[in-house]
Amino acid sequence: MDSDNTFKRVYEVVRRIPRGRVATYGQIARILGNPRLSRAVGFALHVNPDPPEDGFDFDSERIPCHRVVNRLGGLAPAFAFGGVQRQRLLLEAEGIVFGDENVDLTKYQWQPRGEQQ
DNA sequence: CGATTGACTGACC
DNA sequence: AGGTCAGCCAATC
Image 1 (cartoon, rainbow, N blue to C red):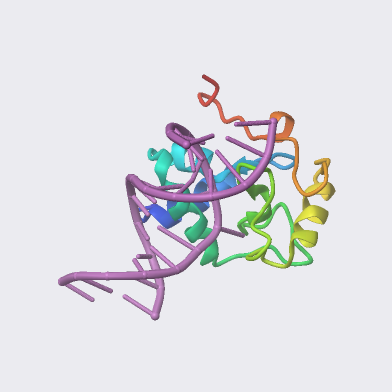
Image 2 (image 1 turned 90 degrees about the vertical axis):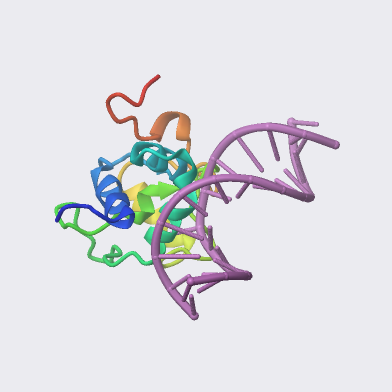
């Protein structure tokens, strides 16, 4: 329960992402306390123990990795849990508008309290 | 235990 | 303005 591991910490932050919003690896890393943790953040999701399925429920405790995007506003096309296409559907299902292969971080980037500087 | 990779980011050219 | 190079943190092999 207590996030003693950096990985668990990442999961906690990702789970904190509200519906209809997205966050970047760097942002999550910054919340963890190390802005350079961006890579470890991606690795954490790489071993994502609870990836969203077709019947993904927002009430579930799964980790919405599809809400986590890189600085370009898109998930890694090579490691997408089910394909970038799937991510797009999930994000659109939350109300996020996809530009082409990336979302408008300027509008949909998650803004946790205290993160606005 | 040591070296490498990795779902990234930022800076430099 | 866009592409390329290097760097940092942590986990895995």
